[in-house]
Image 1 (cartoon, rainbow, N blue to C red):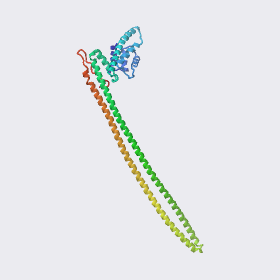
Image 2: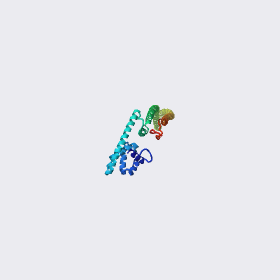
Image 3: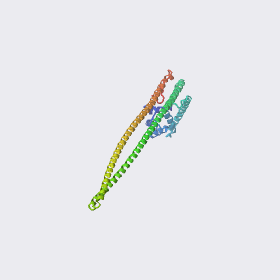
Image 4: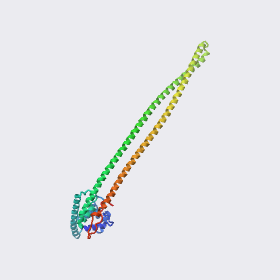
Length: 365
């Protein structure tokens, strides 16, 4: 029955892919008394890990169980299926015994967790056990060396990954430190500029206050001047009416003229001071603008320098990742070479047995 299952599997797998899909399963409709829906149900029941395909072992074991549980349509089919189930159970018992022996061998070799897909290795081991048992010891020794080599490679790979991860962590820490240092520098520069701006603002406010005071004094002087001029006009208008008081008014007029001269002199002094303050305020504003421009220029230079350092660190990080990928690629190439070379030493065949073919590990070329 196992041969029949293998024949049905080969019928489905016409492309010799080594597995069958749901579409391939429908090709059994002409070989078995099942509908398309039943075959799809068989495929869904056989696929245990939901990977979308069936290996030869999964197909053979699952098909035998399914046919053994299918309802019989007539007495002739029932007797035929009972015979089929009996022979199939015997073959499955042999297959289960071979699987147990193979798993026991892998546990003895400490290689049960080394190979990702043990199906092909198990089939080859069972085939050698049946056709060339004298080579079974050599094959098991070969599996022991291969598993040891793979475990060594895994340990070496883990060590390299730890080293690369440690370097990457160090570089990330350096980048974080650089970021923090840059932020601290920017914060310090902002505080310094804010302090300078506060000082300049205080000076500017002080000059503005002085300027306002001078303007108020100037307005008072103008008011006094206008008032004195008004008084002078009044005195001149009263001279015609007050001839008796002419001398006294003349003296008063001279005094008023003296006051007017002093007021004019004070007005000129105030105007000179006002012009000096305006010029000083203009000079201070120009100096402030130059300092702000120079500070902005210095900050731009520091920012560009920090960005260049950051780009250099990113490039170093990228080179380290490329170096890690190169090391892993070399390790895989070395693994493939070492697997292919020992296969010529551990396999031999006698004159009456056909060659067993080349053994490939999962993931090999």
